[in-house]
Image 1: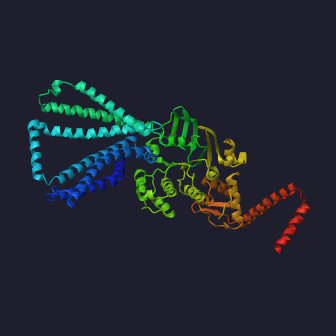
Image 2: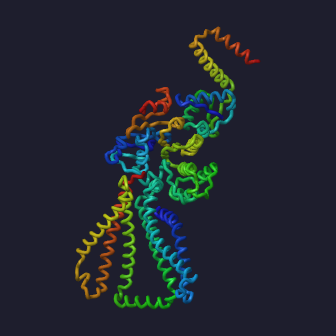
Image 3: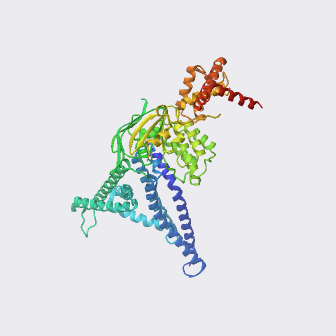
Length: 269
Length: 232
Length: 123
């Protein structure tokens, strides 16, 4: 059942994102083309420099738009599809409420990651005139080798933890938003305003929790937070693990809260 | 088990407001039941409770032996008052979706009904008129071979010809031994198809009788009795 | 086929009457097969349970019979149908006579009004 929810969630959102991604990549290509024209920046007020400027402006607008849209779609899918009229359809499907949350979370994360990827790729593509692929590859290899030297055997572990941490950070942000929307739903009037207020409240709680964790784990031996020393591999590892713990706790907490509200406190208009 | 729905002392409050108080009902299988009452009497609240769209404040509610949850959702087909379809889908896609999630969905029946109504499956729901969207919803609901059909105001705000069509669709498509509960305040149109009626007033059951008992004992139509009972 | 049903009397008794009329007037021919309960109910826009009740009563009375494998049929007993038709006529007439009585018409007067009207109807 979760698979089916995922299928329809992707269907509902892909039709918004894919055309946008395509447009961004096209404009990326257009800008790349402009950059390739020699001395293009030097002749001011010429047609080509005007065209290039417009193209760049459009491109940047699109990228900013994409970031905004990822954010807005994320919210709207949860709010409109589950708590609006469509909720009558969704919540009468023979599916657990946590499946709804999980499917929307997974797809929101997907688009967040893909949007970031598209932005990054298009930037790299545009700048590939000045920085050749080979130079880039060499630069990255150098950084990677430095890491390898420093961390030794645990390089892969640390990289893995860093990726997990990144994903968990995204997940916890999304789940905080979901919980805020769910809490806002409990109010009879001004639901949107209430959700916004709830979001601020939840963020505050998260911050307090983080401070709490920092105090508990503030152990110089474990972290070695000395101003002038570079943390050892083990200390970095510990830091990553504790951060992961923090995000897991926040994510789980807000997931459970959201699920409880959807399961027991649902009240569709 | 011949009861499809039982509830004991079922109550639902929203803050201080009591929407339903101590509802006791026993609804048999294979009956067409009218849930009748003026606006605000608690009909929609009751139906939402059956669908697990609301959680009761107290009391018990069981459908086909289960409390509202996944198992009951599998056997209940619900037609809400609103249009609940996502606009961006095509008719064929929403049919596919129902087929994916409900094992008792009869695809052939659905397409058959669409054809008879001249609704093109490749049209986007967004482009359909309100009346047509309502018909699509009805088709989706009646194409399910469910044990309990919950229809909330199926003929409200619809022209007389469409009303006949809707009643005809309901009669022609429900499963034998399935129960249909129709919640409405437009009684004269549907009373001929009802077996039993439940009068709901201010969140309480004031009368449960078979339709024949009413006509025999009172010598009047359900509509006339309703006007008496609910006189303002 | 038209079904004229009022909501203030039990539907099933109205269905019994109307099916009897349809049998007597030949709309449902003797020996012919009836549509299924569902189809009849849909046509009459009534509850299938109600239709079933009416059909069962008519079976009891002998106007219909069920063959377990092939379905429901109108009786072939033409005499029985005639009897039913006769009974319907009697019911209509006694209702009429009651009404005339309540209006203050005597038997002779009633009969003469009927004769006059029938004469005029011939022209």
